[in-house]
View 1 (cartoon, rainbow, N blue to C red):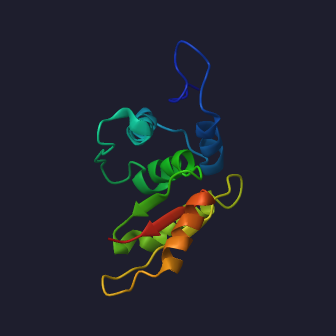
View 2: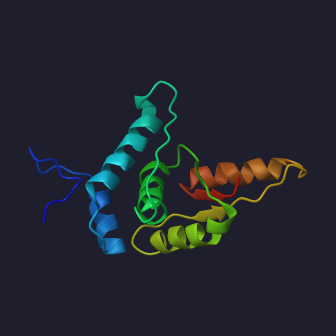
Length: 142
């Protein structure tokens, strides 16, 4: 079976893609791997402003494949990875991340809740710094 993350000229690949396929019992598609690589490239300084927006149709794996893959690749203890999802998807997104990162791959998933009227205490910053240092993932709503 041809793997989307293995180049045709060599057999070198990022083993985290293979681990994800095993964990989720899926075969990653070319479009999913390509999009994940584009986001990682942008975040790591491959684009001048490090911003990137993509759109996929429903059922293409945004919540269950691309989001968790980006969390796995980017939540490295050096940067804070935050997934901002619509309120209707918060519980589902959080459960997908927790099930993904609770067995073979371990990462903590934190829920961030903050209102404009809330006071930003130093303890809040400390929690975010701790989440980053642990290579954790923040899930929140806009």
